[in-house]
Image (cartoon, rainbow, N blue to C red):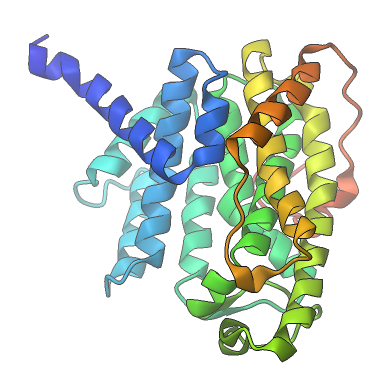
Length: 307
């Protein structure tokens, strides 16, 4: 092995870590509690997710075509030379036995965003969250060395909960891109009306944000129960990620759901406190059966079949 070849994996790991630290601060914090190999692989997974997300939200005129090409490559159809990011992820899929269905489901979710988004019902919201984040939960569980099929529904729930938090936090930014993920049954304003952030729109949108975070709580509670199914070394990291991410919603609630004021962040001192609270996950406890009602609107989707 030459020095150049030997340095390639370490350079890839460093690049993935840089992406994680810049764009996924909650996950970067949690990654310190993983082993070196799991932390590097988790960063690689995040890097790929960020890559397809940036592609979906970018300005390239052929971005939908590129996303479909990635899906073809993930399915093993060998459609042209994959990008560096896709090639690295294909290697990660092999190393961690990641389901191609989960990865394809993620990209399918990004393809949904290529059209104006105005969801109508909470069921549509949950199915979208499954596509763009529940699938990531499934993939992350494999990266962390969890092959217990009983862990799948809980992994889905954590991804769904975090995406609901994202949607509550990013209402204004999404509206400015022509997207309204808040169901029309909760708030019937158009993305343009939300983006204007006029005083008359603030309260109805705030009420919908509150409902979104309330819905997220059900999935966070379920995900917390399933952490015991992870390998011991991974439990603390996921518990920390869960609590820190959930606290974004807590802080948003603390300012009366003032979505028009922009994003909220969790300061370092609160991350420290939440990390200390998370230590209790290291104590053994029984794992109850998964609450199937949480997936009533997700039947037929990857990770839900046969539950």
